[in-house]
Amino acid sequence: MIKIENRYEFIRTLLTLSMFIAFFNSCSSNNAPAVETEVVTTLTQLNISYFTDGAGGSDIMEMKEIRDLVRTKKEKLLPILVDNLSNLDTTNSVLNDSENVPLGYVCFDLLCSIAGPSEDWYDIECGDDGLWACVNDEYYIPFLFTVENMKKIRRSQNNWRMLLESDRLKLDTAYQ
Image 1: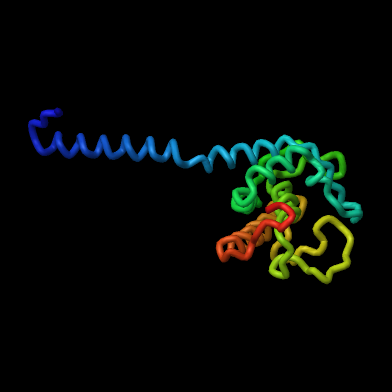
Image 2: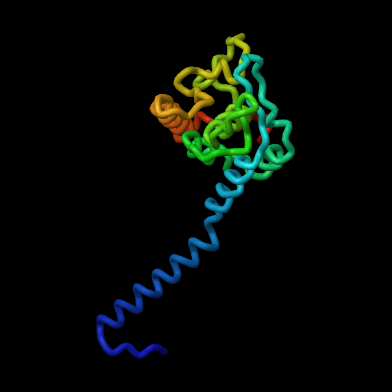
């Protein structure tokens, strides 16, 4: 039994115990930061070659690391990808075999690859060729994260976030 001499000491002891309990509860039950770190690390280390030649296509879903992420993380991936759409961190992926692609674009590529088709963000009738050429403009993220493009990128990220929060952004049924 703990003997407490005065009220101040009693309150301080209660606060200390409360903080201790809260800390250990958060450590044991919340693995979201670990999942995000794993996803971001995997995407940063990928070696994807993107081209602006209009040929379109991405081989991101052909990579074992990505298939494993999608299989194991499923719905946890969508908010992580949306949160990182404007991330400027450099990846091992390259544009036109010369310029490193920011993490935000790799997240955009994966997000478009695993999100269920929806007229909200994708023009289903579109016949254009090119990587993500059929993504509606208000959701499109350009390759280059220049100062001029950052306003559009953040606006697009907010549009994706609104889709996610309104429960209109779902994994494609092929990945559920």
